[in-house]
Amino acid sequence: CVSFVINYEEGGETNMLNGDGASENYLTELIQTDSLPNDRSYVVESGYEYGSRVGIYRLLKLFHQHEIKTTIYAVAKALEKNPKICELLAADEHDVASHHYRWFNYRQFTDYRKEYDLLLKVMRVHKRLCSNSTPKGMYVGSVTKHSKRTLYAYNDTVRDASEKVLWHSDCYN
Image (cartoon, rainbow, N blue to C red; front, top):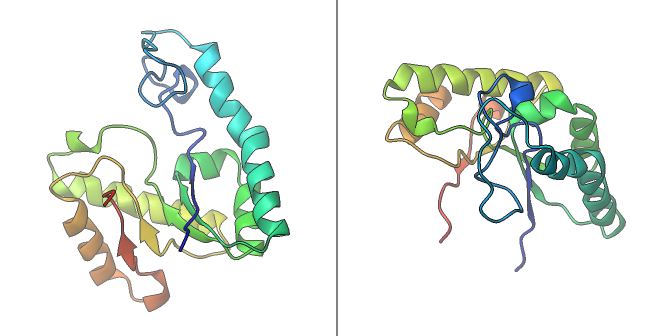
């Protein structure tokens, strides 16, 4: 069995244009990229811009031509910046999973409530942009001691069973 999973993150990275105090340096195609405090990294930004402008459309076209359904780990901020993607994902019935709201270290949340409130925001974004539906799966990326508890609490408060998160994947085994 082969499973295709696409990370759709472009727009969620650390970026001065997002109001951050530095440029992205962690998840780039460039080796040993330094974060630029109070400055933009145009080289790093161009890689993310290409993915959202060209790359995702090429992949979705290939999957459509070969009738392949895939899972998309979608960062909510990336969907907000390019809502047309949601229409394409829904049209071909891909499995949209949440990759949370933005790239930042969720381990900074020492308070369960802050993490829960952000999860509610993520679900509102997905519901608003993705055919009035919420993701069935979740991939946080930087889990905390509260991450699973947060998902369980969310599921306990959801009245509509179709809005529950059915799976959580924050491991690589």
